[in-house]
Image 1 (cartoon, rainbow, N blue to C red):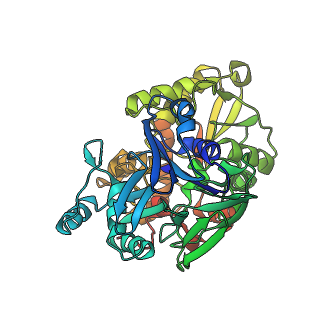
Image 2 (image 1 turned 180 degrees about the vertical axis):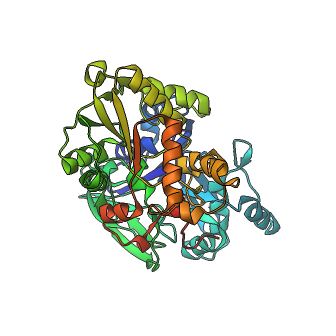
Image 3 (image 1 turned 90 degrees about the horizontal axis):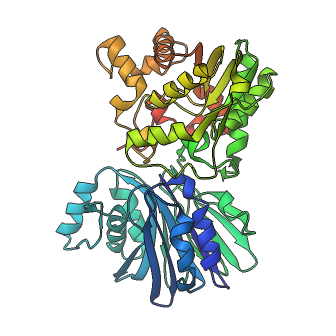
Length: 469
């Protein structure tokens, strides 16, 4: 995944930019960067954050970020920002993107006699590719539309120009952009919570494909929103910070609502409900109220040195760190029947290990409730945990066992009323080793989000998508 933040102000922007970018640290684990600008002079820095915090890398450099406007990014993919000199002028750019046809587009640029100067982990830097596609246009708007027309996947971006920031949201709105305002200018962000403590208030959310130019004096729309919105539903379920809003819909409220709806209809008998922190907490509190069951903390997360973003890239190390973060409370578990709420099941190994820990510390019964439907498809649009190769998904391994073909009858396994779905859930329950297992349904997601299903993406649950090339 990743997240970006920009500031255009009548005062120096370095402090706001620093904290605004830092508040996106839960979205990425690999690279971070910031760039500010005065005239044609850019002040840029990029750091590896795989084994450190954003703040520790950039706090000593703040004095060098001169100017009243800048952009920054937390990235799970490439080193950013990129600074480009072109017929459009000199500009900086950050992106949140997944480009599935990289090789074809790289060759397209080479055929246009363009060249690449940046590498990211030995490969063409995706953000530089986006920048080169932009420079093929006669204007920035023309170039951004060129990006939208050519890439297969998704792309939202911030462009630091000589007199402001151009913000362009993915043409299907798969990722968000929101603008905050204070007395001296504007902040442009991926997540709205990032500017709350900086005393900006939300001015507006960009629509799908919308392009705007933001200066300290105002917002100019360069291209109107497109009609089809397909924002990722998994943002509310997992990645979004609890205090943030997407499409004016709060993340924590959505998690609470889906938990409450599931609690109302769940017939399990238990002593209390708990959460696998952090993203399971909102759902667990909602479940507690919906089922009229006490909420208690049977497991706590050790946060002083382990943030969510502080995770190794190696999967076995990630699983080990995930285990180290969670500390069971034996006094709360011994002899108890507990419902645990979690955000999702991807591979299933981490949850299985957590469950063993819960029983090992005395839990009498463990019942697991999952925020989202079973993940059946890898995501072709965003880089995040649900974007695994499909045979890494526990659902596909179960279907391979049941059908002899991991691609067979997927539409039936996505239907929560089918016998295939029931068999899938039962097999996963046995593999994880819990007393009962239930997933939220797409119907509950739709009710909790509060948008019609046609306005958010559920591809990873049911294979449906719009604009999937």
